[in-house]
View 1 (cartoon, rainbow, N blue to C red):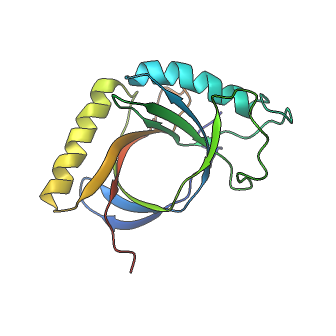
View 2: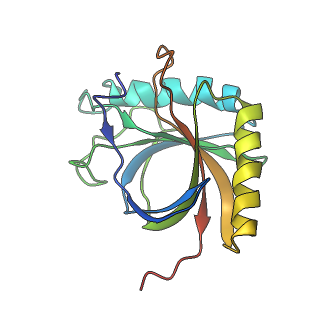
Amino acid sequence: MSSNKAETQTYKVVQTEPNFEIRFYPAVTMATITSSAKSYKELGNSGFRKLAAYIFGGNEAKRQISMTTPVHMDINDTASSMSFVMPLEFNKDNLPKPNDSNVEIKTTTDEYVAVITFGGFASDKKIKFYQDKLETELRRNSISYYGNFRFLGYNPPYQLFGRKNEVIVNVDRDPS
């Protein structure tokens, strides 16, 4: 997978601040695994293999599905998850059934999120640092947020330079 050739999840920037932005993400279909993992490394290793197997033909149709960006990770103390965004041509009704019962096909809802971007290789320490930084910025700007902070990774592990990562969290936003 080359990050500059992969389909990227669409969004619209609705507010730009010096250290973060607010985006609107329309609903998408995702392949998701849930895990008891409590760290980026633990979830990344186990989750990626299962989801990659699904898109590389581990499904009832033995169909290959293109890799997209970003990979979504929700890492927390109760139940963590990793999700691959499915290409726009797919929805819950036309995706092949996964061979692995741990892979679930879900459709998200439209959402507004605050986003902070950082480069380099991600780690639990970096993710926590940018989560704290985003939380501070939201409080400073009197923007209310809810749910877990999530991690978005855009690059394959072999890409050494020009890496892009994000931490996001849902925000309250009046769509009018």
